[in-house]
Amino acid sequence: MIPPVYLDHIKENSKESSDLIFPTWSPQISLDFMAKNSISTSILSFAHTALDDSSLCQGINIYAHNLRLQYPTKFGFFATIPIITVASLPEVLASIKFCYEKLNPEGFTLLTSYDGKYLGHELFRPVWEELNKISAVVFIHPIANSLSPQSLDNSSLIPPIVDFTHEMTRTACSLIYSNTLSSYPKLKIILSHAGGALPYISSSVANLTFDACLSVKTPEQFMREARSFYTDLAASSYSGPVGYIERWLGPGRTTYGSDFPSPIESTMMKESEFLDDWIHKNGDEGKAVLRETALELFPKLKAQIEQTQITEEKSGIENLNASSGGSDIAFTNAV
Image (cartoon, rainbow, N blue to C red; front, top):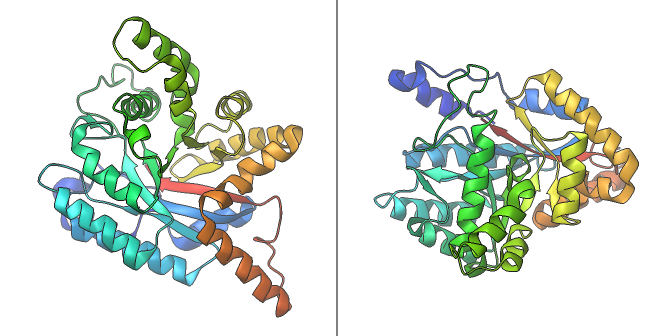
């Protein structure tokens, strides 16, 4: 989502707005996209950039909360928290508490790094501890890291094309080798964009680090933790990756993601065709990717959808979108 409160903030801060171009977005545009693609419910998130203004984060979260109240079976949301630094930690923890107690989000969005530090860094321990207390779902989205090499020697290779994949991989490995995952077992962490390169290089990383005495974590321990992540398929819903990722993670850990409104619509439609073909060939596994995994991740949203369906059935109103067993639950975000 690209909330009006954020666009207003950008307009008021001309230094920030000079190079920023956003796709057109509104709740109705999302609803139209959902109807066109048989998506019953979207989990909205703001993952464009780290925000150092806690009041702006609160405004984004309240906007998303009100949108969910207006469309209770159409939209859920991941809460946005301020940029995480030593100085901002009190505000970050207060933001998590406020959102959890007052706004009841489906989860929280974290970016792959803050100020050059990946999410396993000790700076983030208080944040993970707070999220673990509430058994949070955490949605991790890639962002360019100023300390990492960027693919700018070729104008075709803008950071989202190549670097975001590696940023996701680095932060996932950071979470494993820092023992963050094993220390906070109540968390359910979703790696967006199919987990970056983690599914493909995990065996190499696990064995090389152990054999070179770079870590005492055994390959078996690494692989077990790597497979404890969830992932969405945003910008990754092609026949090869989908099948491999589903087999690598095991059942019940892969979900559909559209990345709407960021990609070109023709790209999203192409991905949808690949995914539909894979689902047609894979029966129950395909249904889990489209819907069941997300419903298990978000039990309160599941209860809301089911209660609304019961109410509408009793009143004789046909719910064309939410009652279809083949309709999707999508993760969408602003990149």
